[in-house]
Image (cartoon, rainbow, N blue to C red; front, side, top):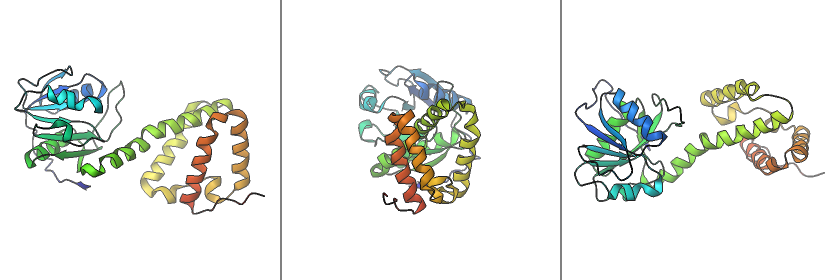
Length: 253
């Protein structure tokens, strides 16, 4: 994986017509962002679109629909997908590329500027095009090898999706103790900022990190009594945190 250099002073190819296939959250967000960057955007179009009139077709469809959507595209345009975990193989025989913005997209849209973007291309021209589109979005393009795609996407899922799952669990426990979600938000933000600045080991705090197993045991007992459905998650997180802190599991009394 290597970050690609790009001259940010270059103007986007305003003459390039980009067809967006897929009317979901990502398709709508990318259509708006590329239009704002000066591209002529067709769509978002339905999944059966053939790409007529476009120089580039960008498929914003579920992973298992990429090959089907690609097969509907008439020969001619360069075809790309926005999957983080998928190689370029489902786009064959088109000249192809991938562009996966490393950013969460909700129904409210997304701000891509400053984020990373995993790209690849079947030809040097396709790779350059992927980098150009990534730059137009304000993202930092990084080429990710096919054999690393699943690992890369797992990292993205842990950093975003699983974080939401974890915070929802924390919200569940806090709610039972009488605290609103908003009271956890400053703690979460400070923790993420510390991790961004210092990395995992140096930003780790709390009872596991300092070896306070008595407190950890009380926490576990409380979860077992009040939210037993979260006990397995808690135990797994304690084990992982002990390992990061370099502490061994305590010997039972």
